Amino acid sequence: MASRKMKRGLFITFDGPEGCGKSTQAKALARWLRTRGFSVVLTRDPGGSPIAEEIRGLLLDPRHKELSPLAEMLLYETSRASLVKKVILPALRKGELVVCDRFSDATRVYQGIAGGVCECLIAEIDEEVCEGLKPDITFFLDVSSRRGALRLRRRGRLDRMEGKPLRFHEGVRRGYRKIAKEFPKRIRFISDAPLEKVKQKIVEEMTGVLRRHFGSVPRR
Image 1 (cartoon, one colour):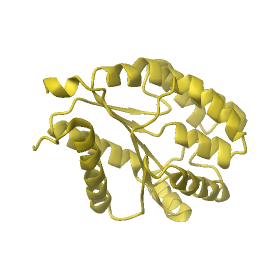
Image 2 (cartoon, helix red, strand yellow):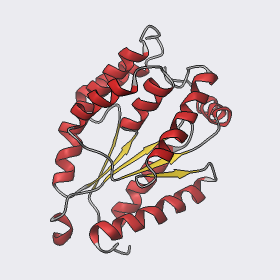
Image 3 (cartoon, rainbow, N blue to C red):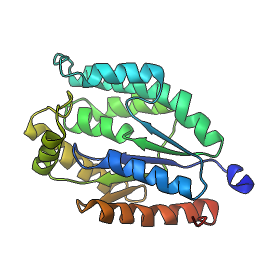
Image 4 (cartoon, rainbow, N blue to C red):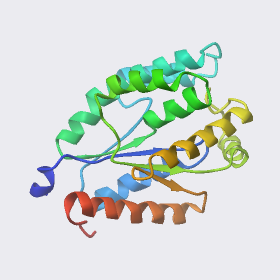
């Protein structure tokens, strides 16, 4: 463990359309990494710090229908500023692995590509907010908009973003596919499949990343 802590930690993000299973897979990966002796911080965006969790409540509350995509973007970036400064960067400096449920890609897709906010504006603000931080690896989990909506209905009450029209979520899915093609070295695009098969694929990809970064992967 001592030699591992000498290196900067890894920043791992999960993203994708609503109902893709990213939160479940992020938790599963965090558990797998811990069984191999890694110190892991599991967090989410928006959220992760006290003020960011307050902002998350505002963003996802179905009562706040008046929020425009521009207002959403600004709130997401405000939340992210706290998450990066208070949680992610300190953990990475200590050599810990950070697994984050959504990050900057989501803002570009939801508020930019699907929402119509200028992507250049989003990129400029996000660069300042994140202090240049980029994920080391991102897992994009795919699911059709209709299948994702069905999963959400089975789960129960929808939050404000989940409850947007189907055509919006179809735009979100197209947006994720677009940026996955732009960043093939960082983004691993994983098609919809049974939970265990997706988990296995993520572990295989993550094993390669760990070996390149740390030189080896401890066995359980």
